[in-house]
Length: 486
Image 1: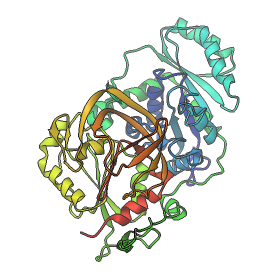
Image 2: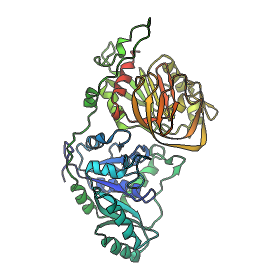
Image 3: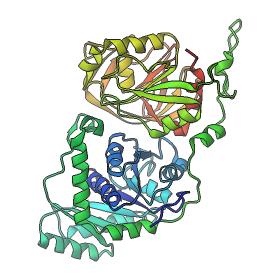
Image 4: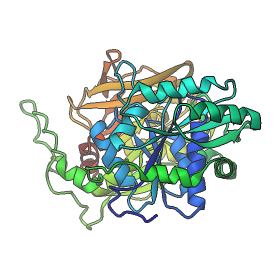
C-alpha cells in the first residue's frame, strides 16, 4: 500500500456501533495503533465535536486527530477536511459517534456517522457488543444493514465474546446475514480509560498511563481482528471528487465581512482592522504573535484553528496556564479554548502572575477569544477561587449537564465576527456563569432555545459556545487583523 499525495484515493474505514458503549473507541483507537505498528501512516478522525477521543487517536498514530462534523462545518467540508488530514497517509480510520444512525437532535441524519460515511464513500465496520446475545445478533446486524441501503456495512467486529462456543454461535448468525466477521474481541477487563463528569480523562492529564492504554488497545485489536481484511475493505472506498481543504485557500475564498456602519460623528474605522486589506505586519516585519493556552487544563482545540491563524499571518505560540507565570513575550492576541479549569481551579488561581498578565492584555484592548474553559478562566472567580477578573461574572460547578448543538448568530461586533454572522456551535459543560451574558452578548441562540449568552468587552469575545473556524475562516482573519504591534 502506498501513500497518496492528494489523498483523494486514500483507503478509509468508518468504525461505528449500534449504540454508545459498544466498544467503538477501543476498536478504532486500537486499529489505528495496530496499523501504525505495521508501518502504515494512519490518518485519525472522529465524527462529531468531541475533543477527547482525538487525543487518544493522536497517541495511536503520531498524527493530529481531526474532527469531521457535518453540523459544525456543513456536509460540504467533510470530504475536504478528511483529505486535508490524510495527505501523505496510507489509510484513514474514522471513529463514529453514538449509534450509527444517531445525529443532531431533530435534524434527521445530519451529523450522524451514517451521513459522514456516505459523504466519504467509505465502508462501515460495525462494532457489536455481543455480551448478552447469540443468534439475535443476526437480527441486529440485518436491521443496521437494511435501514439505509446507501450505507455500506462491510463487516462486523464482535466485542465482549465469552467463549469459543459463544463465538461459533455468533459467527453462524452473522454469516446468515451475509456480512463478514472481521474480528472478535473476547470479554476481558476493560482497558484503563478513566472517566469523569464530561467523559474520558484527556491524554494530556494521564501521561504514560494513556500511552499504556493505547498500546493495550492496539494489542487487543491486532490479536483479535483480521488487519489484512480490514485494510482490504478500506481500499474499496469510492474515490472522492472534492479537493483537500487548505487553510490559505479557505481564507482567500472566504469573503471579508462588511464593516459596521459608523454612527454620526464617530471616528472612522481603524484601517488596521479593515477586512480585505493586505495582511498587517508589525514595523519590523514580524508576524502577529498569538498565544494559545495548552497543557492539562486547556486541551480542547481543533487543529484547523491554529492552521487558519497561521495562514492569516499569525505566529501561534503555546503556553501552559498551570506552569507559565506570564504570557509569551510579545503576545498580541490570545486564544483560550476548552478544557477542565474546574479540575485545576486551585492551581490556576495560585498562578497570580499569569492571571495578571492575561488581565493586562485583555484590558489593553488586544483580541482575546475564549471558549467554555476560557470563559471560566476570564471570570472574576471559579468556585470561589480568584481567576483573571477580566469579566465581572462568577463561575461555579453545576449538577446539570448542558450538552448539544446550537444554531447561533453574533449579537455584537467583536474581534471574531460582525453582528449578524451566523455560526453553528456546540455546548458541553457542567458549569454556569452568573450573569450568563454581558451588556454586549456574544451570541444569540436560535435553536434549540432562544437566548443570549457570552460577553463582548473591549477586544474580548468569551462564550460557552465551541465553534469550528473552518466553517467561517474569516473569523481567523479578523482576529489576526485585530492584533496590534506591542
